[in-house]
Image 1 (cartoon, rainbow, N blue to C red):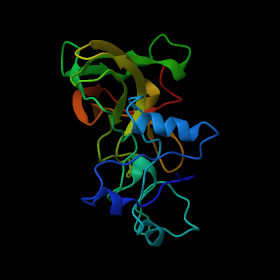
Image 2 (cartoon, one colour):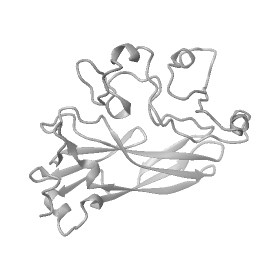
Image 3 (spheres, rainbow, N blue to C red):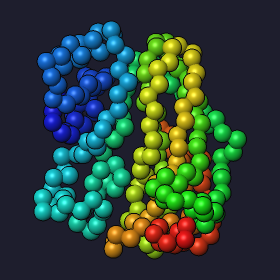
Amino acid sequence: MSGSGLDLSYIRDSTNFSSLIWMGYAGQAGGLAVATAIFGQYNPGGRLPITFYPASYVDAVSMFDMQMRPSKTNPGRTYKFFTGQAVYEFGTGLSYTEFAYSWGNDSSISSYKLRTLMRNTNDKRHVLVTRFRVNVTNTGSLAGDDVVLAFLEPPRTSIIDPTPPIKQLFGFQRVHLNVNESKEVYFSLYADSLLSIGHNGFKWLQPRLYKIIIGTKVMHTIKLQGTGALWSELGR
C-alpha cells in the first residue's frame, strides 16, 4: 500500500513470490477488499493507473525538471513519454481468469482524407473519425471483469512534433464475462486524438499512419491523407 509508485522489482523478480497486490491509501473497508481478493471471493479486474519507475529514475531526472517529454537530461514521464524500462507499466493488471481479444471490424486498415473529416462540422472537439468493435472472450475457468484499453500509437517521426507520445489512451471499457462468454465492446476515435502538438503549443492534423492497439496488440492502422494543416484552420 502506498500513495505513489514504488520500485517493486525485488518482489517481481523473486522466485519467492508469484503475484503482487498493490493498492493506494484505502478507507476503512480497504482491508476487507484486499482479503476478499486474496481468498478468492472476488476476482480482481483493475488496471494500474500510474507507471512504476525503477529506483534509478530519481537520479535520472532533476527535481527541477518538470517537462513530460524526453530530452538529453530527462527519460520522459508517464506511459506516454517514458523511454526507460518501467517496473510495472500503466494498465498492468492480473485476474484469476484469462481473456482473449479479436478484431470485430471488416478490415485491418482504413483511410481518411483530412478535409473530408472536417467538412460540415461546427464543433471540432467532437469530429468522429470512426468506431471500432472488439470481441472479448473469457477463456479461463472463472467469471470476472476485464478492463479493455484502447491506445493510439502515432508515428515516431514528425517535423511538427519531434518527440511524439509513445502511445496514448483514447478509450477503455469494463466488461463482465462468465466462463466462455463473449461480448462486443465499442470505441469511438475522435480527430482530436490524432493531433500533433508542436513546441509552440499549436495543434496540427497531419497525413500520417496511426496504429490502434487493443491491450498490447496492434489490431488496426489508420491512414490520414491530404495536406497537413493547423487544427484551428481546418473546416473553414
